[in-house]
Length: 223
Image (tube, rainbow, N blue to C red):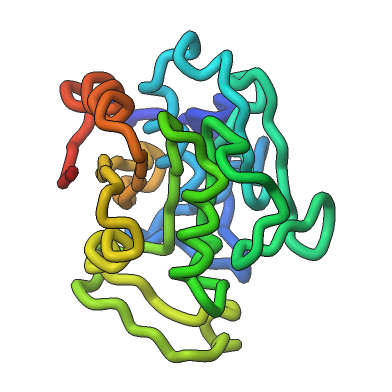
């Protein structure tokens, strides 16, 4: 008996090709017809679903770029910044005070930024001392070493670099006191796996994340 593929964001069961007619790396149609989610969105949702709502509901959050992986109802307040559109913020010089947010969400963006180390420092600056910075980049698990071209490549969607898993140490050097919970999760529709990174300045916050993730999903590495 075949298993019906279900989107974990909208419960849709019909899928089509992704942008430019692409299939997933497993040869499956990745785009949910109902909500438009792709593999990366459903991977993120599977991880966020493990964090209790009562932990999130009193938190203020800032999300860079709108996508369906995050539900605004999870938070006390969710601010969204869309670069060069609504509420546009420059990651290399974020126009917000220190410690402005409990949660900062930055998915599939750092590869588009010329000075990613400055951007990472800025993301941490606006995060409060017990907060969470959640980051993803395109498929870092497919290579060990980051390839940085020093300019945005048109044939790589305007990316400045293709991150490898060495990004863990790369960003750790930006803020040596930072703690990381690195989660490996799977999209049940396409069976694609990827990493989701949670950075925090606070050991107690790190331990809360570990407690919620550790028995339900694979933890690759943490500091």
